Image 1 (spheres, rainbow, N blue to C red):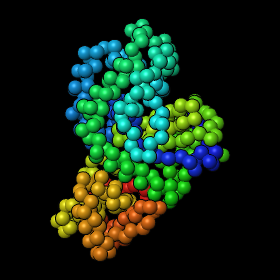
Image 2 (cartoon, rainbow, N blue to C red; image 1 turned 45 degrees about the horizontal axis):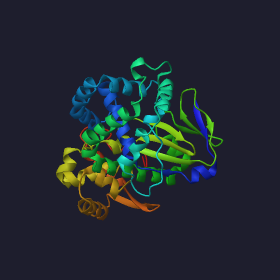
Image 3 (cartoon, rainbow, N blue to C red; image 1 turned 180 degrees about the vertical axis):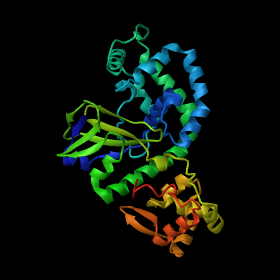
Image 4 (tube, rainbow, N blue to C red; image 1 turned 90 degrees about the vertical axis):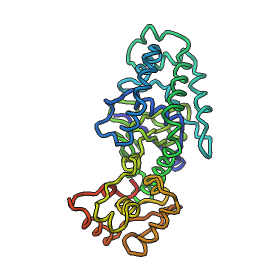
Length: 341
């Protein structure tokens, strides 16, 4: 079991960070896994893989050295650190992908090979004893960004921002132990200022006074990284947020309220902000606002403030209406998550 011992000041000063590079590395990992990824991968990720996996495999087949590098960099239990750099966290807004990529491109070749030793837990293949490994890694990430991430980035960014809002709400509702334990598999608050980061045998570190960052990505993957006084937990957006927003809407409810408004009501099985609903439904802010007003006036939802956000959730009447409209009388997507997840 690996854990970090974190003092109160570090936890209080931690922040969420949006990183286009982390999103691209996560996408590269998803492409490298291919169809063997996750049985539980959400429909949006599977559709994305179907669209981009053939071109990725063709690219790697044409460049066997880079293909071997990527396979080696994503080891069984650890990533080569140079390909997953810790975000700087210096930007108030979103950093530029090209600026983030510079850190990979400028990695000393000797360090890249040392990192591969750890990720492989063994000798580096002879074909990778060369000085251009950082440049090759940067080039394949450039390709993934341009071909498979950038076209979707506006929506992915909205999903990431929605996840941050949800985590912030969960933090206010259940505290750090609740927010951190639900962040990624194998991660939980142990007490005694210790955060379990994985279920393997390491690494365990005492890290007082560092900059701690939480970095959401939309592919179903994650990792931890650190660089000097910066530590990061990269984690997958909550499943409901990473999905395509196609919650199952019972047909009677759709006929009664209309498909768009019924979809909003179904999604409010767990509290969500207007921003989250816009990201999940793909509807405009004005449309979502109008649906929320109608549902509020009808007594089907209520709202409460959580920090700077306003969260909406179903009332008992709203719950009853959703259940009554479901001919299967089973759980409706969106109702299984707890507040803020």
